[in-house]
Length: 485
Ligand code: GLN
Image 1 (cartoon, helix red, strand yellow):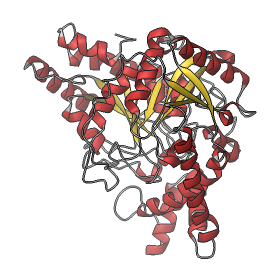
Image 2 (tube, protein in one colour):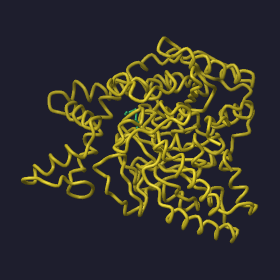
Image 3 (tube, helix red, strand yellow):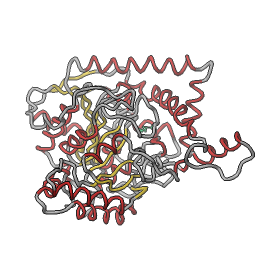
Image 4 (cartoon, helix red, strand yellow):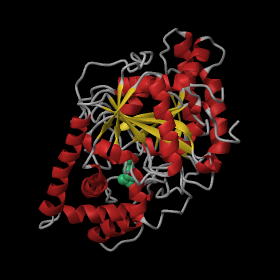
């Protein structure tokens, strides 16, 4: 079972070679052993998981199983799940048990999937290394001295270490793709608006998007089939006809035009990453793809633009955490204002405070035009670059992250260095485009390298097709961290 895909596990369940209770117990055992060493989970609740597994077994017995029925999934602790502690990696929510399900959780419940546990994450999804979590850093299964990436580091590590066959995450500036790259798994961020944000704790609402982690492109498609779809409770949820994201997987790639942005292959990328990515491109050429150079001239602005807009939205979104309605409250205070101050001072970590300060500053009278409005204008230019690039190609390819996994502590004291680890992913969020990362080899120190695919709006099925065909021809996605088995 260890290295089984979701698809293979579902086949075993359907053929009664295993029950959901057995599969769930198998992964819970791994979560309790290796999951603890990696610090990948914030909560596990065997009783709730096994109750869901028993319900799934009844569905299977009744012949009512779908492709995810009975499959245990690990969910980032940013999704509200009824009856589950939902902390968002923060002290300020360390006692919050969600009274309702996020849209994403609702969808997986309706599909008969099992919640295997809630995964560790950077506090309020702010980070690229999983070091800002109130619950401590997550370790990379390939090298426990290294970070797994962030902010969905726990979910990525869980799939990489085979603690769950698939997981969920969220991606505001790279938080699905970058940890997927650093841990050698697949991760997909859909087009903005394809997956409802209802019940997903907000960081930067115009950028946040939920998506799946898995070992294969095919499993990502199965996960996305469950997650995607209109939801009236999220005003930015898009009303579109339902799509089957597996429909194009088998298409031959002959004649597909791959765009290679020169900006992605310039100075900033580490030699070992560039080498693996170039080999992947050569492999895709062998499969019949044509390559064309494209330009994203405003891409260099994406990190500074993001670090105006995302903190601005965060400062507003996080104002609701005040110790009144839910979550942590400072034990001692003089009056109401003092209670707000102490609660927020004690409840938030340093990175979250930094973002709130930046966000409040750029939104303040006198700076709003100079920073916030300016950044919005540049965001438009960055999106326009992609419109032009997609005039010449079908899918854009490049590295997901400029380096492989770095050491825990290595960048923790230097926020700008940390922010730069998302240099290739952030523009995709600013433009609202879909993007994904798939393993494409190993760099120095045997650390995984991720290949980033960027699609045009709603081209998830096409990206998944490219990834699936690549995975039919190569075996990187099946490699397991040493000591996993
Ligand atoms: N690393 C980026 C940040 O810290 C992106 C995080 C994310 O995508 N949630 O904001």
